[in-house]
Every structure is written in structure tokens, then in C-alpha cells.
Amino acid sequence: MEPTGGRTASDRLCRAAAEGNVADLRRLLDGDADPNGLNVYGRSAIQVMNLGNPRVAALLLERGANPNVPDPSTGSLPVHDAAREGFLDTLEVLVSGGARLDLRNCYGRLPLDEAAERGQNQVIIPRQISPHHIVTL
Image (cartoon, rainbow, N blue to C red; front, side, top):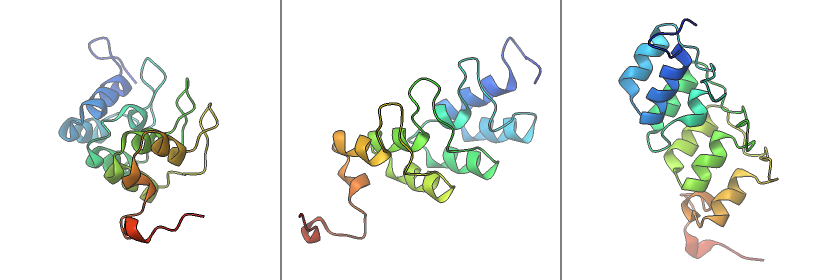
């Protein structure tokens, strides 16, 4: 992809994703931006996206972003990040879009391990189950 203003289309796409700017994201994806393209730091838009905006995840997945590419430094997937930070809506979008919950990061941790360590109970306990009905063994 050709650089524009010193940045590639992938850099601009990553910036729009990180800012949660759905309009710019859509415009870039309609143009020449590859949803799996890497920015200058070696990360894709889905790896740096604003986790608080599930529409960003949905659009990237709809356009072919791979949710199972690990971060080059931590091995974490976007589902690790969403689970750790408690962004359940984004986590659900990622899983619906093919993200796997059974892949470990470089520290040997699953996404649910990350959620448990941070006390993100809304991620660990499914919405349909009342916490009063949880059985501990």
C-alpha cells in the first residue's frame, strides 16, 4: 500500500480502529486498506482497536479481519484483551466472528484466566445464569 502523508493505509486503519472511529474505518476499508494489514509496530487494526466500541470489531470482522492473530510481543489475542478489560459486548462480537477462547498467550494464559485475575465476573459468569445458582465444587 502506498504511503500517504508518511503513513500507510494500514497505519491509518489502525489509528481509526484505536480511536473507535467507525466512519473513518469504513471509508478506509472501502478504499485500499487491508483489514489484516500491519501498522509500523507490526499490529493489525483488530489488535489495536478500541475495545469499548463493539461496532469496530464487528466491522473489521465483517471485512475479513482475522481475530486469532497473536500480538507479536505478548501472544495475546483481541479476546484476551477484551476479557481482561471486561468488554463483554466486544468479546461476544469477537467470539461470534470466529475468535477462539482456547488459545494461550505467551504467559500460558487463556482469555478467561485474564478475566478472572482482573475480577471481570461479567465475563466469567454467563449472563443467563444468576450468580445465586453457581455451584462451587
